[in-house]
Length: 283
Image 1 (tube, rainbow, N blue to C red):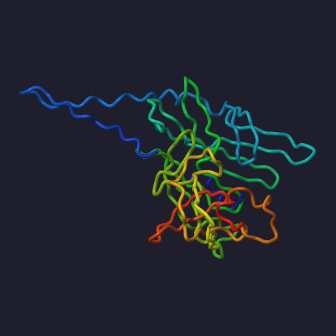
Image 2: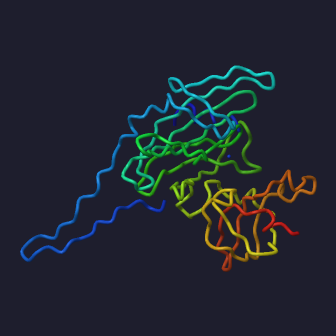
Image 3: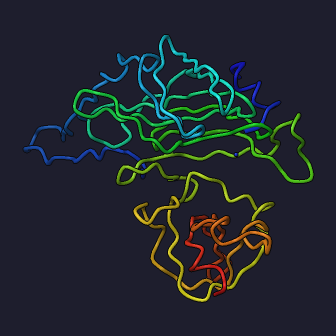
């Protein structure tokens, strides 16, 4: 495990399979059946220097220009300085099936009370690498580490640990292993395995408060109306959310417009997704 990943254990800050079908062509009598060779995939992105690129760091809500894989921002009047460092090794895969390899690359940021690791997709488009700004994996101080991000035939596979309430402390990091595969849909990073859904994990030890939605709920892969939907709007007998989401001490503005929920469908099947708060919470 890279040293930076190991360090995360002690700090806190939490496409459908791309299989190219081989059409079998009927050959003439006396000739062997033949299949066209798979289309060659360009690996041009492997020559791109991510360590000299401009990054959008979602964890610190900042834009940073790396030089030699690193960046440093001097302390400002309001807060302390920040540092960034690119993580590796990068993973490569034609994620959007356009004939060009894309990349998954990590970024470590820290400063003041902030300490985070995040991995992002960079798509190769028109001869340049374009960052997808929503991370495909993230962790922060006192959360479990990201063990690896690798390329598989189905997408970028993330292996990480998440914390278990009542068992893990800040020094120990996470203890529950989680593995999922990321694809791209309409420009959004999404989970494609083991189930289609958001990048975030619906932790059953955190989503424990049952609610009875007053109307149909449309789950989405991110807290945005433009994000890919998870199925069609449905009436769920129960959705599970966090205690914070229903805290009487928080205003609606403080809770936000979206909640990460586990929706329990008929037969007990569970779906993880983002739901608008006004579709889930009682009026």
